[in-house]
Length: 281
Image (tube, rainbow, N blue to C red; front, side):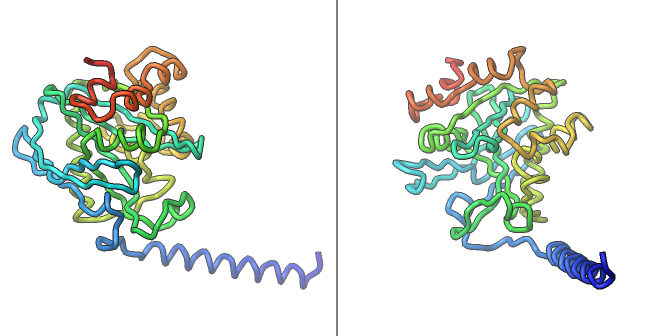
């Protein structure tokens, strides 16, 4: 390689390096927006008010989508939950039909009175934005925690989108960990309204964010660099591997047992919906 060619390569590398530094600098100082023309289902954010063993969650989302996802029927309610009444925690997975490698995951809390509250960690998008894996790696979308009536979250995915939805029971090491997990997620939800953060496809997505909460209960239990946190359609397999799913079945058998789309489509929006899709009554 002659001298002039080496010199040109060095110049090109220098230009690329400077460009990358500028991008990193720009991204690092880019402020997370708190105002915007948000998509309808992401306009109102929930907050939690603690009072001893009671927590009141304001703006629990309870949308319905009929007949299509674009036909939204907005609804919210405030509800008080007893922290001592958490019966079980569920891990919900929705592999995307159009992308067999990706899925949306969220956590749902079952209470003794048959209430189910889902907490879905999402990218907050404006009305002119569509979710992009690549844009999600940059500072594009704010990170939000949505507290939602479980029927809102599952009916949309199973009955309207007609995606595959799985509801797995979670096995926690200690009984009090269900409460600790719930409180930790609610505190994060509150903190984001004060100190907003960016969503990130790799390190602050729906699944990797759940793992951060799990690791606070059991430090180091799941590596933040596990590939299933990025190819999230296999997140249920990761959870099973680390003993987080309350079953002795293989992942194939577990997916068959805890598949809820068919029954959800069959029964529709009925009383005790969450109990019925789990065949608990």
